[in-house]
Length: 615
View 1 (cartoon, rainbow, N blue to C red):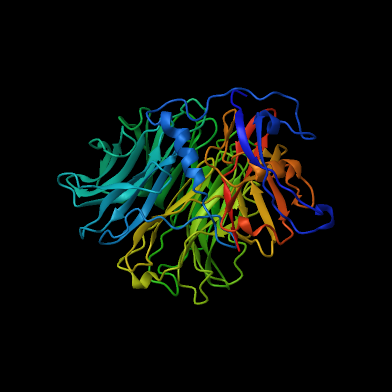
View 2 (view 1 turned 30 degrees about the vertical axis):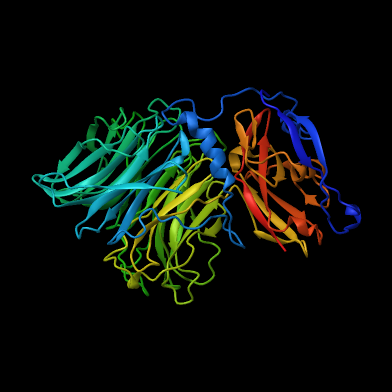
């Protein structure tokens, strides 16, 4: 370790009668010590015996790298505080609050070199016509800059936007410019300053029947790392509704191999989606809404050629519009692939909504293949809903820890089954089992908004620490783009403790299956101002009395299972039993909690989870 904490002032904790369950009392004693973070890197008995390496902190390239760690520390200091019970999210962020007109049909991408940097896009009706608005944040969604992509000369309107940020940190928005001379254009706009200004569009394709664009970028370590793929459909051609793709190998500056993917004429293909696998395999998925089949295909040579179409599954079409609601629904689904090196590496997932009978409601399912598309299994996602309400418009992403995450609309919190909330579901075992979390601060009634439609999909992306939905919210009466930062790696069942009574807190630690068998330690602090850097891992806690207490009392009756080994899903259940009462002088303070994960060297530290102490 290159860094030590010098002359740190500690608040040493005194716990009289702890073994007998007596009340906990914090008494402060000022001491001066020198502490090396190595001391918490390899505690017995979970030690692997290897020394921690000196490693660079933060990303290694890009214009924003010099400030990344400082900004990450400042962001984590905010201590996103969830509501009891979970989810572990903060207040909804509204990048365009107050913008006139409705915004919907959104996409968002998080920068793989800087997870505080994200770029979103959505259809915007503020001018009365459909245009695309972009939204850029460099501070994890606290502030946003936005602007409008206007129509190119000769085109009527634009939309159907999709956003990626390449491994080199370049944002690229692809969209449709509709109804110009020669038809509708698939255009690509890229930004060389992180999404504050955009270059003139590059034409990918022009055809009279183009519609429904989606895109993906190859973040794997395969031979086509950094490539962008875009897919779209062509409606009502002589060959049916056909599926098309193109790729770019230079961050969207040029495009090649515009080609049809689907094999059979006469199909009713709609809205393809694309994703990359761990060896740069390019997957394309679409719905055949004539046969009600989910179809996939893949390219093993960087989008130059494709194989034979694979029928991954079938579905029962959800009616448009939904009973009890007024927005249209198409068979628009989402594909994602685990491009990590974990136990589910290469697994392919398709999230889709389907109609259920005799219950007559819409639910979310996932098709999963762990053998390269040879076989497929179906699993139910919204397993916690016992109300037979509607869940629709799923969007799926696999994070770098191997978790499969799906964002969707959900009505279960409304007994009348029409108010909408955004929810996120997570599976840490390859799509077999699911945990679900509400995201929206409140539900809204679409019929009481200014939107003439809700859009056909919602935006969603994930990073090392965050899941970030990006969706229209109509609580104000206008459909405004909304985002939130969801911390699923560590959260609690309560967010407040009373100094007068104490209490019990249950922690849900869920890093992901790529960390199965690694060591973890739940640690606490009353501050996150500086934090502790352990190799390349930033632990968002300061060394103080609470931190020392969590070191000294690990796996005692006070901190049950706070030190151990992650299970096969990269998870652990931890309980803090504070007893009570404790020192009323602590009232008004926040306590911060983070789990440190290590194997032969430091691996990861979770988000800082906040528990407020009240009288």
